[in-house]
Structures are given as C-alpha cells and as structure tokens.
Image (cartoon, rainbow, N blue to C red):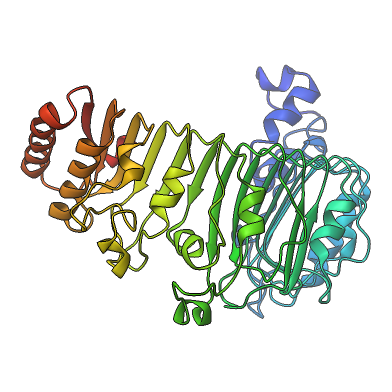
Length: 425
C-alpha cells in the first residue's frame, strides 16, 4: 500500500519535483526515495549533482574518498552528456583524467584543486564550451598547453587561468571567440618567461598578472575595453633597476593594450613602466585609470603616463603611498611636488573625477597634502571622493572633510568634495 505524503508537493508534476530536489544536498534528496513508490527514483532525475565528501563519513584509513572513485564519477557524468561540470578536488593522489577535456556536451567547466597531481592534456575537444575556469592545477608534461586548450574550444567566451602550472617559459593564448580572459600566473617562480603571446582579437576584458617576458611575439587586443594589469619585475631585475638602462622590455605588450577605455595598474606595473619600457604608449581611448600604490614603489612613470591619456575623465588611487626617489626632485619626475613646482601632467590634466580609496591607512597628513596638490593643480576637477578607512575615528574624518572643503573653496571652487567610508565605495 502506498503511504506516500498526501500534500501539495506530491501532487506536483515530476519535473517540478525534480527541480525542487535539485536545491537539496544530494544526501537529503536521496532520502525522499523512502516516501513512496512514486518518489523512489525521482532524486536520480534531478538536473544537477553536487557531491561534497566533507559531509560523508570518512573511511577508517582517514584519507576521505578513494581516488579511483573520483575518476570513475567524472568519466560517468561526461559519458552522460553533462552540461556544467564543477570539480573542486583536494584528494591526495588524484590524477584527473585527460578525458575531462573531451566532451561534446560541456558548456561550462571549472576545475579547482589544491593537491591534484596534474592533468595530461592529450586531446582537447570541447566544441560547445563557453566558460573554462582552472585554478591551481598542473597541465601537461611541459609543453605550452594554453594554446592547445583554446584551439580545442571553438566557441569559448570566458577563460580563467589562476596559478595554472604548465610551461613556465612559453605561453600563448589564441582564440577568435574569447571575450573575457584572466591569466594570473604564480609569483613563486621569480623568473621571466621567455615568450608570451596573445591572439585574441575579440577580447573585451583582460586581467593579467605575470613577470615581464623576454619577448611578446604577438599581442592582438584590437577590441579590448577593460584591463587589469599586474606586471612585475623579478627580484634580480628589481635589484639591478637603473634609470640608465632597461632591465626588461614590456613595450610590445603595453602597446598592445593602448586602446583600452578602462585600465587598472598594480604598483609593480608602475615600476615596469619605469624600468622595462622604452616609451609609454599613448592611451587615446582611456577614460578611467586606477592606480594601486604601495610604499616600496616610486611614481616616476606616473607623469608621463598621465600626459599620454588625453581624454582621461576619472582617476582613481588605491592608497596614496609611494617611495621617495631622486626623481621626486624633478618637476615631472613625480606627482608629489617635492621640487616645489607644479607637475605639468597635473596642470594640463583633463581629469574631472578623482577618487582616493583606502585613505588613512598610512600617513594621513601626507595624504591630505597630496590631495591638496591635486585640488590646486588639476584645472578641470569637478568631483573629489575620498573613501576613508572605517577604523578612523569620526572626529578625525570630520576634521579632514572640513579641511579639504575649506581648501577647495579657493583652490578648486568648482569641485564637489565627498568624504565617505570605504564600505560604501
């Protein structure tokens, strides 16, 4: 006799019940099989499978899931035509099968690992894949697997490679369909790659962190709109940095991104502009520039960079820290006005909106003086927003706000000033 639940849920169509079950942990949805004959196999038809071994009983040996089981599960869902595969594997000794990159059905693939031994990239055939996310894994046996991956993904639109270990020395990304790319390379090697290439003519968003390569044979970003760049020098390059001779050359890469409209540069990238660039390119389309700062990097490259942004509207500083260098004494060697003269990059600046993030983390007095320099020298400034650290006392913030507004009445009367907490930024 059927003693199943006599409620509204049981009277729903089976497809809808399966959809509801998909929101439950797989262990809980499986328990519904005891409710009645009708419910016995419904959980098996849910459209998704989420398996978290942390909620399962550990075997006596204490190593969690048996590695061979993980591999068989992955191959099983691939054979069944899975559309969305998300693997977060931290099982000791697991080597994910190379067939994870062979599927006629996959639309989205995400692999994240902490200690997986690697994935051999033998063949790549993912004709329907639109999104690929790889984080902290080893690919291949030393060859450049990045290009092999993209060439086997015919409609790929988004690619994220975070700390993906492949050929350390040569890497290239080539795709005519790619629109968003994140390539965040590990800093643990402290070595310059020999060659880095990008052939992505339809890319609109780029997030890239790496050491300066010895060469950039191809940099094709003809559609690029938004870029976040974290180029860095190795410790050897940093130790040998000199104003007399370049210690590296990132000019070709920087020329390749000069058509962007929105650009964010790390503090290390400022050093690359100073010591690894023949000449700073002109960013004719740039309307928003964000500069991340720290106290170990100087601002020698900022004056030339700002001069080469003829239509820049919004300038954002994440912090106002920099290392004082001999160039601070030159009128156009820094922005700090240490020379006593106004930097021409500020007096001719087209910037209308200035934002200061993380105000007050270090040296409030020096930061106030720097903001005053901006107010008195940037002729087109219409809005200044200072986002202060929420741990700064309220009385101090009131004083800072009053001081800046009083100064602006004469120095920049057309500029509206806001001082707001960082949590609202």
